[in-house]
Amino acid sequence: MLAEIKGINEECGVFGIWGHEKAAELTYYGLHSMQHRGQEGAGIVVSKDKELTGYKQLGLVNDVFKQVKFDDLNGKIALGHVRYATQGGKGLENVQPLLFQSLTSGMALAHNGNLMNATALREELEKEGSIFQTTSDTEVLAHLMKRSGEVTEATISEALNRVKGAYAYLILEDDTLYAALDPAGIRPLSIGRIGEAYVVASETCAFDQIGATFEREVLPGELIKINQDGLTSFRFAPRGKRQMCAMEYVYLSRPDSDLNYVNVHASRKRMGKELAKEAPVDADLVIGVPDSSISAAIGYAEESKLPYEMGIIKNRYVGRTFIQPSQELRELGVKMKLSPVRGIVEGKRVIMIDDSIVRGTTSRRIVIMLKDAGAKEVHVRIASPAITDPCYYGIDMSTKEELIGANNSIEEIGEIIGADSIAYLSEEGLENAIVKDKTINQGVCMACMTGLYPVAPADEKEMDISNC
Ligand code: SF4
Image 1 (cartoon, rainbow, N blue to C red):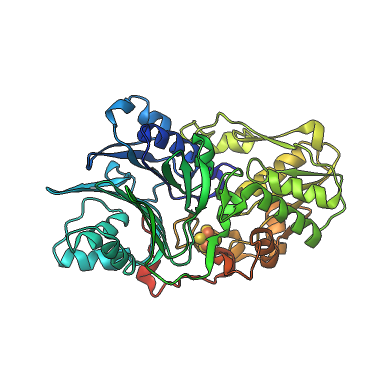
Image 2 (cartoon, helix red, strand yellow; image 1 turned 135 degrees about the horizontal axis):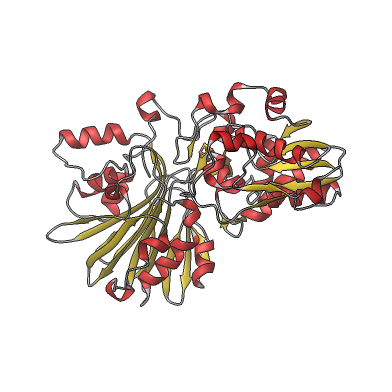
């Protein structure tokens, strides 16, 4: 489903490349393939002869760079970012990469995730005399690193040990590119190669886009350094159990991406299969809510030996800025984004697969829409457990008060959305669909569905959600 109607939003994608003649241009294509991770702003910084220059703007990648001549962004090392902004942080100053120039060097930073102790660290740094240019939590790391003057693997490691939360960082200092992942590996970050050049990206779909091959994952608590000596690995924290965000697989990432060696589409199919085993229902056909629920619907249909059909279509030309119908017209049934395929659902007992339910308003609208189109029964099956808790790790979702799963039983949710029956995938079912081998220190974060946080918020202040 479209991010803006689902109510769950990514917060950013990062891309870095070291050692390619067309570094900026390839970064543009890499960012374009990760546009779904952030639509508020985009930027690229390049390094040539240790001098850093960049361009960033609010808007979609295509719009931001349509007037830019890539020959002006000359250099073999580049860093890029797409941003989704939370409330209060939508200004151009917060668009990344953040670029810092001093008399002796330049440094750029791109971040995906959320620092839970950013406010406390910022207060501490301001007391010591630091002046911040942005309201972004990313800048906190820059000040921590620069405190001791030079930026090296030692000062980066020291700074990373002060921050708490989920993060995938790319840092460009002079002619060296660094990549770092938090000790629980909550956010995705992969390394690839294109010719002799190295690439690092939030999602592997960016590698396919530019013709790069996947090399390996950045490991939890690992700091990677790429320069003329090649790639060197450092450890800034003990390697903990990997707890990649389950929502990346359920909804956020592109189906063609592999996260932590697991393909997103294949994992969604397995979620559908697990769901069919756990919650079968007598029906005529299976449909999925486009786009992110299609894979799970195919899996459910395969397992239950029922036909998979395209019962709902999505209008691809409804952008963020499209004029939405007034409340009055909405009630009259003016639907902008999703439409039922009447010829498929009319007179049928339909199993409708959705990846998740946030507030329930969209699900209710879809059930009504299917019934209006003549569906005899609509059985809702959700390919993940109910969302009951907020995310503190960089995914923007509704507050606890707004989460339908936090305030209602499953039966009540079924009644609210008007389904003939409803079932969610179990926590175990979701974990089985994602984690290939639980014996090798692998797991997933499901905190928004279980309340069990891999990095626990210590106090109320840390629960403030900052920007990525
Ligand atoms: S709390 Fe939910 S959305 Fe946040 S990182 Fe964990 S699984 Fe992902």
